[in-house]
Image (cartoon, rainbow, N blue to C red; front, side):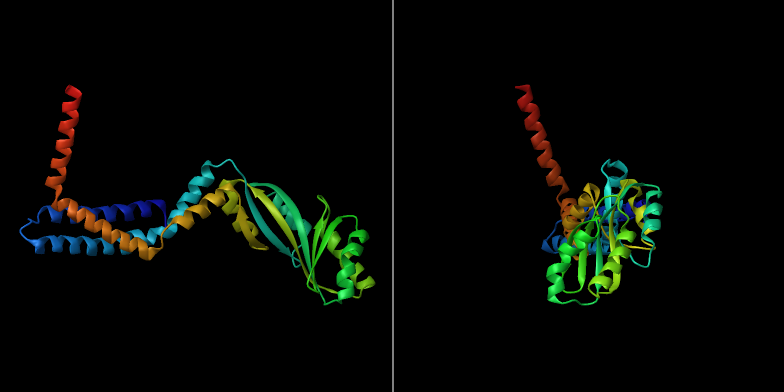
Length: 267
């Protein structure tokens, strides 16, 4: 939903509240029945306005806020993604570096899923793999079929995978089923959505982080759900209706307060 449409929906809800207020002004307080009528009318009209005009825009508030945060923030967003073995890693990294809005691309690790291996290899593979390739800085073995590998900055991840697959098959008879290269991309907040849409066509984007995303997530956490919003609009309608009924009394209170302030200033 466009921002103009959101503004229009809010205006339509306000029009309904003006209707409630105007109707309440025309309702003389002769008995309890009139007051009950105003309360019910305000609640029903508020519920209808909340359901048709306010509730639908709740999902768009984070989007509007995101556009505002991204246009005003100077902090970089971080896009976390996994490159499957069906994609040429080096070609993808070069493409990502040349994408508008991308500030930097870094390989954070490699996961290799293998055929199952024995507990003997589970206990010895870590040290032996690190010694077999100078670009590998650490190895974590998960279960009996998964290797989580950290590599040096600037190393060729595809070359590391190819050499490690050959080494595993030659030394331990362990074959590789598939692999994924974990990459982080620093982006200009204003271009994050554009970068995400462009890169997600060939890789899996696992998450997006950074100060801008933290603000958006915090906003989403405090926004009420649509049911609560509709009920809240009903109570707003009640308050508007009661304000219309007791407007003379409310204005009288403000006049008295204003008179006291003037009197105190004169003294």
